Length: 512
Ligand SMILES: Cc1ncc(COP(=O)(O)O)c(C=O)c1O
Image 1: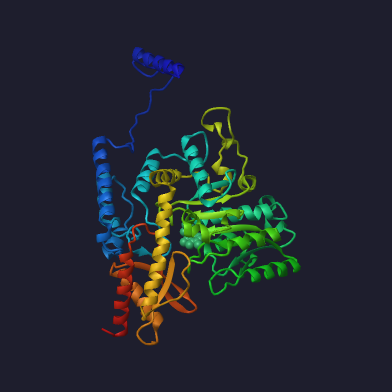
Image 2: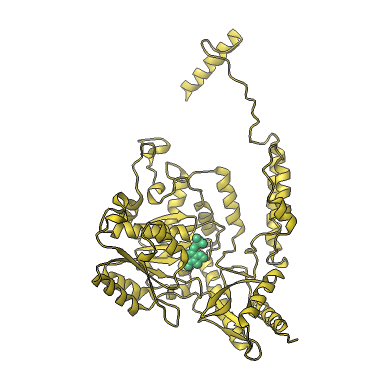
């Protein structure tokens, strides 16, 4: 370091003496491009404070706002304009954000947002994202503290899921990518050929994977991506409880084996997206062990529910799976995006993705003193510091408080189910075992066109900004689907939902 200073000083002295560039060196070209850092740091500080103030005010008053608003035509038009050639400045960019974006988000900060499977985020989680972007670490690996934070947060994930301390894992963008990675490890570990080297065409027997008909489409996409093809998936029927039919599964595995196929993996579901069912993971694990199959659990929704008493009971067996994919941006209320995959056998995880690249190899010191660890565990090289918001959020609230919030959501789903059962004009369309309630308006007397009426109810609930359930269709019946991964929901919000469903339903039927 001192040596560098000396060289620089020597050069500068030389420039002073001669009055132009150092001997034998051209004078430096002019720095004529405008830089990207602010010229006025105090204006930057002031803008930053205003952004935080505006956000905090939004969070504080979220309950008083409509859950959702559709972006107006003027907004859509503004968002079709070509990029500016000349600088518009940070202030103008922020004003545009306030006018065009801030008013029309998805709505999932709101206490009455229950659509699809969306988490509600937290203030500190958002601040942590700001800090992560501010430091702009690339967490592919290397000798940097961000990797230590990620490793610690991953160790905490093993505690939550009940995996051994020497298991391996990786934070991902979400459940979809976590499933891709888990299933890639399964396929590459169980294949009867070297899948990475020779591809699936080299497999002596066609590979087969099993999942219930309620499995999320991202798992099917993962199998397509891995080159196994959709035909390699055998969908297994479900029982009345929407859980995988274990004897049908066992029969399918035996039949395929007899027919010369290679059964290698079962995907278990820990809270299905349609109705919130949880496969019998205890029995599924036993079945997989007996048949030498890899058990991968898609626990995108339910994984973290293991922090609650109800969750621990429902998810029993998940801790014995070979790999688990789960989300933190759903039921751990961490801001998007944050998913995770855990693999029981660390070496199998590494072998499925490790690569030998000179430019990523380890050195005895410096920033490359640690091999590129995370890059060896998945397909991505550059990775954001998303672990920071997970790490800071868990520090802020502790696992017990998260468990209590999840438990409350379970209780709220049960409560909503009771409200529906108590209202003769409403009916439940699926059993409620976790945090998802599927119901519909059925009217005072049996009516034609209930699907259309329930569609109207859903659209009106959303467009009037009252509440956001989403929808699904169960046995041909259009269902209003309420998925509670919301730490802001109160029991009174569920009463309002029921009252408004009845009001809009009666209006749609022409009853006043
Ligand atoms: C059961 C299930 N698996 C996987 C996913 C995909 O997760 P992500 O949206 O985080 O990619 C979802 C998303 O809702 C899901 O419900």
